[in-house]
Length: 137
Image (cartoon, rainbow, N blue to C red; front, top):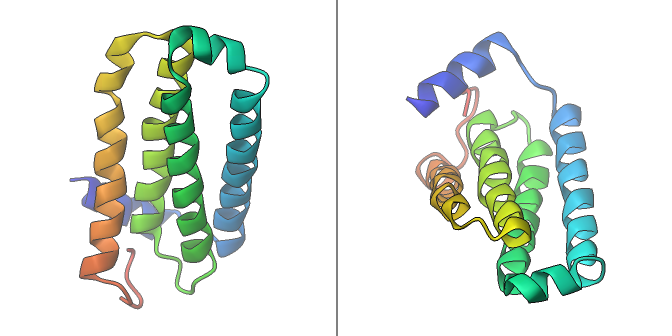
């Protein structure tokens, strides 16, 4: 279902590599900023909540998948399927962990696996069709 939606989106709204690379750059900028902010500005809050490791995990996964956004964004044709899987994974997986670390609302942990599944889908997509040309994904 997600694959069909992404293919339909790709067919009707072609995204340029430059846009993909800019989004990747913003994600990298946010990863560095949030990593530094977690280590310094939020150090006491995260320690009090006991969620420093959760924050660090969010930053790590954001960094890893931001690199993939850059790699895919620099390729022609742009692989929108896995690219969007990684972007959605960053937003949902890392985003829910950032919120969990700050708020200590444990129900946010139930959302995190959805982002993890999106990461897995992106990696699986690349494993199944690593060099597909002329396709939406």
